[in-house]
Image (cartoon, rainbow, N blue to C red):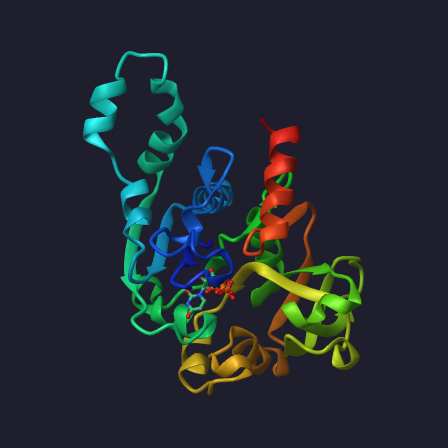
Length: 273
Ligand code: UTP
């Protein structure tokens, strides 16, 4: 039902400078796998095989990662290290990858609009690879189920401490009757001050969007921070009752911040390794 997943990956990743000067933030590894590979695995787990990546200058390592490295493969063939490439090889075999470049980094909403050329006129998933999720059933797979029931845009949310609302898009809404984890969204605010936040229900980097979002984004002016915000475009859909927020099951690590990145590294080392 959802066939394509968009990965906005053009941001500068300034919080990780100088590491991100010549290396994409999405290629920073948690243990041995880059962040974006976890995201692609999550999409595949949701039955999505077509990966659409919005990249930018200095991001070529992402394309190389999702390709064969003949010299390396020849070098390690038949040796003890060969199995280390099994996972990524199988991922490459199961997925297709297409790319477009965001020329000017005008915000997440603008990056998603840039991806229209790869998505076309169909509902699609969005993964921000720097939000790393871990759960028995992948978060995107959970969201696809929600989409099947409601047929409108779906945002993944989690409760955050009230003093952190200014790092997120925050929703307001009512629990849908008969559920304890799905809200009909009535309002959304980008990075509100804790005193202005309608709730502590924060949007994390997983979305399923209906394609009318592109027309809305075309008319969305720059908002908070001078950037075109996906939250502002989603609010237009929400006003028509066409956005639900889903409290997913699982853990999320904010790997776009140094604290979250270290926490994820330790957690994966102790739990998954
Ligand atoms: P962030 O807000 O984390 O920004 O973007 P950033 O540039 O990646 O990192 P910092 O804040 O400078 O450290 C959220 C997501 O949106 C993408 C980023 O790549 C990331 O996946 N993004 C953001 C774009 O693709 N283009 C943009 O213009 C802005």
